[in-house]
Image (tube, rainbow, N blue to C red; front, side):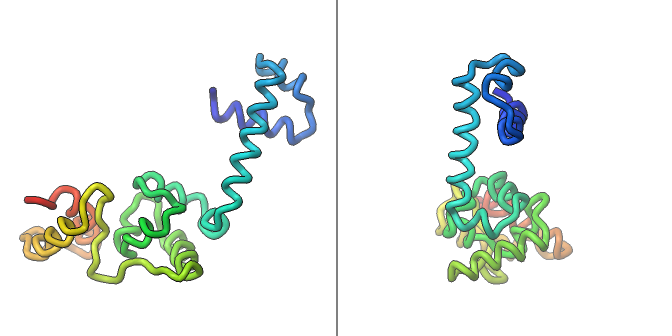
Length: 162
């Protein structure tokens, strides 16, 4: 199944075409065509129920998903610092502002300065131990702020336990 084909089927149905015409065009049964449209509508209803989809843009949601975080999990999102979020590819200041506004609305906040985001697979105790090693590492002393942000993002993954 092609996602783009399914979206085109949904668009054709929303344009008023019958299931029979759509099914004939794409070589599907009328029943399968109706299922595709129904699944899409159910997905939209599910997405619109959770408040995160109303406050965050698609870019911010996709960036969190690519980093392995469920956008609906407020606890996981609040484990990030501002700097570590800005290190995510395609996650910019506008996405950060949307995310902070959403967290503020939910009564939460991002980690403050000096805290380091940790990978989900690393236990918190190991991440705290590695934070001390990060500060004293020779690489950390001569880096620019952008370099430090990148190093702090990967440190829990590669530096923990060493």
